[in-house]
Image (cartoon, rainbow, N blue to C red):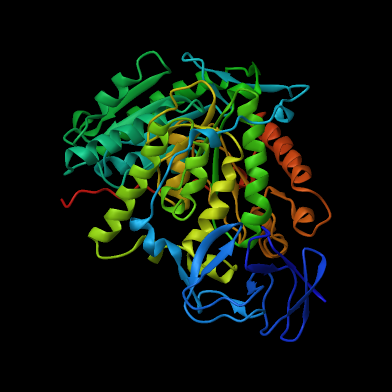
Length: 499
């Protein structure tokens, strides 16, 4: 008999835990059943556990993840060929907020003994677990000297700008928020802004916004006379700043100083089953002990918004989440397309994910059980001192990671089922997988694996505590593989201007 997993007693599909051939008898959650496979089914892919009529709901994790395109007999392979995404009807869905569903995190997440943590306490009292010198261009025309510095000094963090001028006011506001958010990140000890001198927002403006928060400078290429002259001036400033940063010492801080950003990318079936629940557990530990957790990827929420509504602290927060989703949905419709056409990706589908709704049901698990305290945009920082916040940012991995760091995340956990090398310049990104396949073929880019949980040899809590231990080591200075390899991928969110 071959093993399959059913997440909820109300589900009508199960996920294959081993290769299944047509005619195989199926064990559901280690219990014998009358189910016989009608097709060959790969690990991580799904089969119907009962007859599903055309048009009927396909249910996973107790939620509708799609609708049958045709009659699907019990035991049949259930995937994109015979399941339509339930998100295509999202615009007509009704959303209700019930404050009685909001629960506090269990006291069992309180740490009896706090781990020793060390970081750099900034003037605004936020803590950095890295002490970077950041050099950022405020317009694409100023990229050359910034990139030249990055090539000459690998320990400088340099970010080039793909835009910065000929922009409508809404795009200008978004760019200002993004660049300032990155400069304010507590992992940045000092910052230099490089501009041309005639762009939408002058580099001096950014520098003035930093106030006394940290050492900051600006260089305007037109004022210096050439890119080479600007490079030499920035080099001189940067070397002096770096000397000052290198003299700083870590001081003792606490779990309450963690601003955790969570992300999943290159997802497969193990992401929802194991990796993201483990991240959610760690998120709860951080929040319960006074820290902040940020969860982004707006485009990956569709089909699982009921989870957010059930955890939103207030109706205002719930309404804000739905408003953001409506805006995103409508943008796709204005372009003549539907949100579910962009997700799941080909890699997700190959890994067993059938619909955007199914992917979303796994995505939201990164938030754990915490109440959602608020919603923040790119470059916006949480209003409270602790808690779980939802961050409005795109799903593409480098943009989402950059969005989280622009909202103050000082460490990131990034789950991947199929494997990803992506890192981000400002915050360390811990790469987690629960996929035995990923470990086998992509271990060079994985920081921690919890495949023993996937294989049924350990509980999610066991893997989550190992992940938490890795988080503490990373905060204390242990380099992630992405940091070791120099993975500093940067992508800016798509601007909305027609200019």
